[in-house]
Length: 343
Image (cartoon, rainbow, N blue to C red):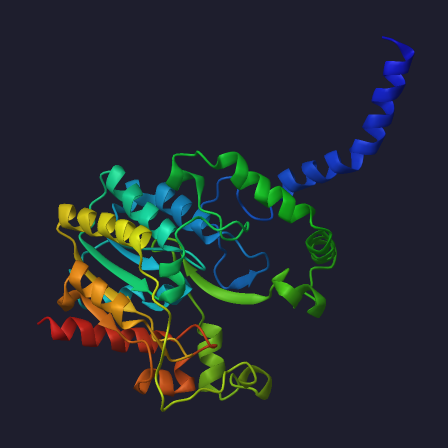
């Protein structure tokens, strides 16, 4: 080998060695759990340090377990939908149903549409379904670009697999994340600086791998003990006009209509017993009346239930963990109401 070429390669190897080392470390540690296969992507009742891509977790968990459990009933939506607990839902549908949370944090209509199509393409029975919607979900008609929000490759026939994995490599190599993560791995402690901008977190959640259901009994215990709604936490709750109703901008246009029609057609094909719930968000902004009217005309007025805006649920801050997520007792109340109306 030419000496000059050898020296060039040697220098390149020297400069690339830190990068190659970090890639090797990424592959070994797999912090986002997108490389190896896991029986459970979330360890129940332990600190969940790294925020995972919920599209990936939900889809991979379904793929790993469907042959065993033969799921036939699904809850779709964003992070609010995780609080529609399976045991509560089974009180209103066939109690022998095999139920699964097919949700994602910051869910988009695009990804929800892909999930329903994925089940249909796999010839999975969809006997029952809950669609948990709001303005934010309905307005998103493309896959998100962040590593947390990008859609799982399985849902797009692996067309985006290279882009998907590159997102996580870049997220790992982000100096701020890398410093925080290595510090945690060495010292085993989630420090305050690590929680800024959600680099890492110290949230403890309960997780059921069979149903892909997340719950927060620790938060409920703090609430029961009167220790949850601290002055710091209350500072995040918005001041609202609880008298004059405000509405979100119209969000259902041609692209949304097409995606919603495709979902409805699949539900018709499977003769799905489904309900559409519009989230009662703490901001009390009501979903645009034209959007609600469209949902009613498409899915049927008897299937659509709008809990957005100013009402008894949204007036009470004790119904919420934060300004977005309402608690399981609210979801239980909503299910009791919507299923009772159809009896």
